[in-house]
Structures are given as structure tokens and as C-alpha cells.
Length: 553
Image (tube, rainbow, N blue to C red; front, top):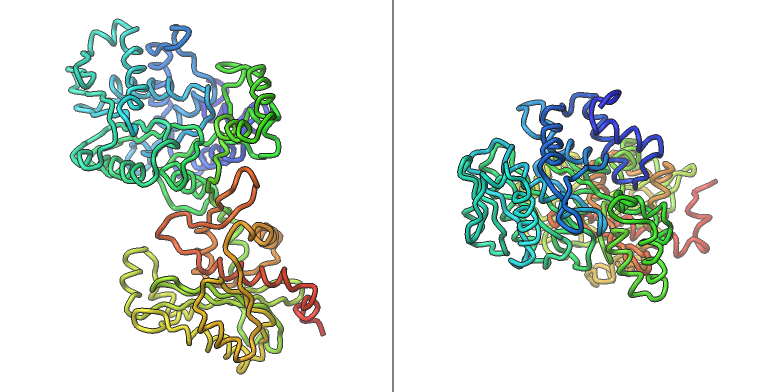
């Protein structure tokens, strides 16, 4: 492998030099891993990585159209090295336990998964290993399972150690089983897997798929270094395990997640407008020129150009651009750079501003804010409200230090079991009466409590309802730009910072419009939504009130 210490570094060299054409997510992944190996976040065992690679290339055969031994490409060797060679420096065990491999059709996903199954069955060193090929239906689960069995049968040395029984493949010497498994969340509770392969997870039904994934993931806990491997192209099902994994994966890659065991390997194109560009397609098809030819794609592009439905299928299967998919929005460093500068209300005395309100739909968190322009910067002043009897319950359930935020004045206890919206009104009124800070427009979700809207209007506030949907796309793009160029300032408010980091964007691949969603269901984005409501009315009314909002003498 000279002059590189590992296949990881060799691949990273080709990425940096442009020899390997990859998208943003693969570039970020290897940048994170290589950086982590340098600073001691991770350690690397060439022995463990190479043992897996050598086994695959010495014992694992192709299954369709040819039966010669697998010859792993550089991107595959790097992926195997990530899975088996990157170790936790604290205990020397594998760092990553949850692997997500998203790559376009015809790039060898299934045969790669079968090779991983075979390696972990024969050489992983786990006595009594249980290996499951999981899918919604048994015939789907059997795809990787049967490929693994055929792979074993093609090598006499492996075949001699394995017996195919009615429901599984059994290795007596290590008491290991390989088994196809259809969805059955209740029965899965008693399993103790060393490896779970989740095949074509983008096709899993939403609610049932999420439950099954969580059941199998939780079952891994009894093993020292188990693995759940999800392989897929993009699909069409919304809000299932694929969407959930994609949101978590992109959040980790952007630095806004503290997960330690997740390894996202996402081969996805960057620019949807270049879906018919061969060079762009290399980003989602790392095996182009190996298992799939450029001419194949040119034919498929010509077909896709003939109709919207064919184009949608092409985007999904060969670009990995899922219809209505979600991905984390902002990198941690962008949000962090927008925070930290503390300003008192007194510094904005006599200023004009715009406001935003996001009311809690149930019983938990409400956010109010104003955005004030001063010397070309847009400063966000945000206030949160939470029912007093819910603080400790929500803190424990969500893992958020709400009591600390209350002590810092970021959250006001309001009402007992429900937020008292009079407190929201009084916060805005105090801005006017105590500091002469004058909101010229206040944006609110049209589904907000109408009596608060009426109360605000009666006092003299100009209220404007904001529809929460794809129509927010221009404002969100503007907000992105304002954050990245340092214009939008979030202040010394860690709760608001967290709400910005909790945002994912669900994109409609046909219209390319986006709308904000939560990275995880338990997360809050109320503070972000309130700011977007404010920026929406700023954009809408800027021609009429823009000069006043500049607060220039």
C-alpha cells in the first residue's frame, strides 16, 4: 500500500487530487475520518482492515454473469477499511456499529453485502454469531442470503465448514448462523445479532420499517462489536427508515450530531440540474466503468429525457436523489459562527424591527423573536416559553437542560400545563413600552391561536400569517446566505443555536423546493421557525418598510 498508510488515505489522496470524482458527503466523510485518525479521535488497524479485504478477494466470487473472484475497487477497499479498520482508541474495538451505504443501482451493493456476511461468519472471531439478512418480505431478504450461500459454495474451503439447513446456513465450528428474516418486530425482541444486513431500506414501509429497524438495532447491545449494515439506492417512501437514516447521516457529516457509532457512506450527486451529466453521475456511481458503463448511462439519460416519470426514476435510482427526501441543513461551524455576541435590549432602544412567533401546538415550547438591523447586521433576540409543570419531564425525555436555560433567562416558565399566550403578548408589549423597540410587522403561523393574534392587533401590532410549506424556499435560501456571510447574528443563545442545528430540509426533487422538518422527531425547531416567520415578513414588506428597518439616523 506504499506510500499510503491505508486504503482510506489512498482514496482520500485521489479525492483531493480529483482522480476520484465524489460528492460533498463522501468528501466530508473522508475529511472527518482522516482528520480523526490524525488527532487521535480514532485509531487504525491495518491488520484488521486488510484481513477483511484479503478474505473478500481470496474467497468471495461474483454471482451474476461471471464467477471469478471479487476484485475490490479503491472505494470499496476504503469502505471495508472504514468498517473494520477504524477503532475506538478507548477499547480497541470497532468504532462504527451502524453503517449506511447509499449507492446507485448496478454498483455492486448486494454482492458487497454478501461478502461482508461471509467475512463476519468465518473470520470475525465471534462465537455463536447470529447474522440476519432483513427485509419486509422473506423473498426480499433471501436475495443477499442466497448470494452469500452461493459465494460459500464456490469455495471448497468455505463450503466444507457450512451446512444449509431448512431456515439457515450453519457453521458448526463457530456455532454461527446466517438467516433470512422477514419483518416481525415482536419476535425480533429475543434475537442477539452480530450482523444485520438491511437490504434496500429505502423500500421499507415507513412505520413498520422504523419499528423493525429500531428493534434490530437495540438487539445489538449484547455483542462486543456488532454491526447493522443498511444498503440501498434512494426510493419513494416518505418518513421511513431511509429518511431517518439520511437525516442522521447528513447531520453527522455536517458536524451537528454527537453520534459516535454511525458511519454514513453516501454516494449522491450534488447538483440535481446536472442529472444528465456523466461527470456528475460519477458521484453516485463509483463503479462507473467497472460494473456499469458510460454508454449504459447515456442510453438511460435519453430515455429519462422523454418523460417526467422516467426522469424521476432516473433521479432516484441512478442519482440517489429521493423524491421528497430530507437532509440536515446547516453545518455546525456555520451556526456556531453566527452565535456568541451578546447584546442587551438597551443597545437597541428606539430601533424598528420585525417579529416572528411560533406557538406550541400542544403543551411544550413556544418561541417569539424580533430581528433588528443595526450597522448592516441582523440581530436575533429570541424568547422561549414553557409550561412550569412540563420542564423536568421534557428535560429528561429530550436530554435538554431546560432548567439551565430558565436560569439564563432564555426560557420563561409560562402557565402550568399549557403555555399562557398572554406571556407572549406581554413580551412584545414590553419591547415597545420599556425599550421603544417597534416591530413593524410580526409573522406568525396561520394555525396559531387566533385570540393571541387579535390581542396583538388590538394593541397596534401589524400581524401577517405565514404559511409553513414549500413557499418558504426563497426565505430559507436567503437565511442560509445571511448566516454564511455573517449578516444574521443569533446572539449568545445556545437554545436557539440548537434549534437551528436540529433543522433538516425536505426537498421535492421535481420542483427543487424545500421545507423545514426536524432531524429527529424529539428535536425542536421552534426557534428557527419563529426567525423564518420574521424573515418572511421582512422579505414580503421590505419595499414599504425597508428603509425604516435599517435604523439609520
